[in-house]
Amino acid sequence: MKKKIMSAVLALALFFGTAPAAFAELSDGALNSAVVVTAKYIYSETQSPQVGSVGGEWAVIGLARSGYDVPDRYYRDYYSTVEQYVTERGGVLHERKYTEYSRVIVALSAIGADARNVGGYDLTIPLGDFDKTVWQGLNGPIWALIALDSRDYPMPENPDAATQATRQMYVDYILDCQLSDGGWSLFGGTDAAYADDTSDPDITGMALQALAKYQSRPDVAKATEEALDCMSAMQQDDGGFSSMGDSNAESIVQMIVGLCELGMSPEDPRFVKNGISMLDALLAFRRSDGGFNHTAGGTGNNQMTAEQGFYALVAAKRQRDGKNSLYRMDDAIDVKLEQGGAASGGTGLPGKHKDVKQVPVTAEGTTFSDIKNHSNKTAIEALASRGIINGMGDGSFAPDANMSRAQFAAITVRALGLEPKANDSFTDVKPGDWFAGYVGTANSYEIVKGVGGGLFSPEGTITRQEAATMVARAAKLCGMETDYSGAAVRDALAQFGDYTKTNDWARASLAFCYDQGILDSSVMNIEPTQKIKRCEIAQMLYNMLQKAKLL
Image 1 (spheres, rainbow, N blue to C red):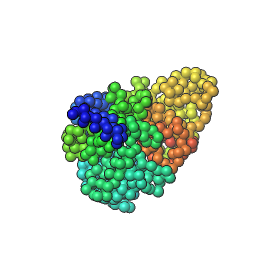
Image 2: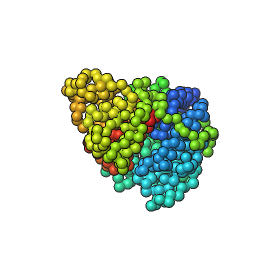
Image 3: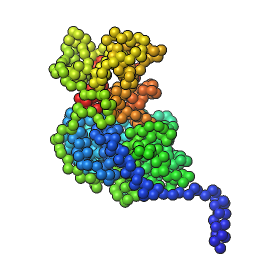
Image 4: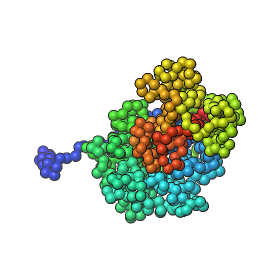
């Protein structure tokens, strides 16, 4: 009889088509182990979390929601860092990129802090400005909702807003931008949309996260089902997703978190292909030390991917354990915060190169006759007081003059406290040249390279994209995570009208500089090939040293 039944089952399978591959759910033990190992990795790599999308909020959120044993001091120090950062900027985290507020709000909520009173500033108020929030594309309203809903903050009233926002307006905006295939893209449905816009799993996953709390609305529930169908169809045979032609971990992350926010398992049958779930696909990017690679075949850890991969694992574990989702934080940890405390500064980041040192003030009060009302005055004076940057010898600074490659090498080496030492790498840099030691050291630490043919071109000028690339290399020596790729580059640069004019080799560095506030992202265009000015380089290095805790 058993043989007859089995024969009948096989016959039906052959009649209706090939049976799907068997699926084995990831065991609780394997998931728990992955969370613990990666938590240990994240904690070890971000001993001093800063305000930023790498080595900052995402690490704090993942750890705080993971249940991993982290000392309260870790979160208190982070809060003090945020408080100091907010105070120094007069409560303005960014003039145009309002996801900066949202990201910090979510992290503060995760550690039990109230984002409405940080150093006396209410960080939720900017999200009451509808026009400014949606300016950067769907990221704006999506993360405004996630942030405000993370702790059920009341909708802030923004007296300066041309259009006062409501939660309904943000939900409607997201729905209005849904593409015909059911998903979402960064600018789809807006005037800034590309002609060939198609749904993107990163943005679609985030949209699902934002809409998760509004499923009682029939139009939201309908849009959600359409998006799930779209993403199920887009899912690859290996269980993963591709964004901008790149099969990557971050796209899987956002879809895992999206399903978990909806109360669904990331191993839902619709998202299992050939017996491979999204969790299986994500773990294929994971390294044995707990870090993650951006691409499955990639080499070396990508810290941004590691932090995102971590909080996706945390979201999956919380969903399986029946706990609140990642962004529903009425069960947040209760950290006894020390308000008004000063964050530690001037010591550098844990990952900085051993040769990089803080440069002390040796000429306090140094200034120049031509920077009295200049917008970069603070940066110029701060560097000049430490002997990092000099004037023109006549009491002036010439802020709008171009900077030569030799001058850049000199001030960067001084800024990092490195010892000038010639290395005879370039035929046009002679031992007796004043800049020989600076160029040699900058080259030895791979901050600057030649122009080809054994030449350095010391008197040549530097463009904005070249400056960003060199400053990013210097920042890496300072312990900052500069490895931007894929969606991170797109999200940081897509707001600029001329980002497609940047060279491929410069985009990751430009993304890092704009995302970390080293370059001013409130401008409309990058102007990548424009020659950089002395005042601009001073500001870039000043911003970088502040972020690296070396001022």
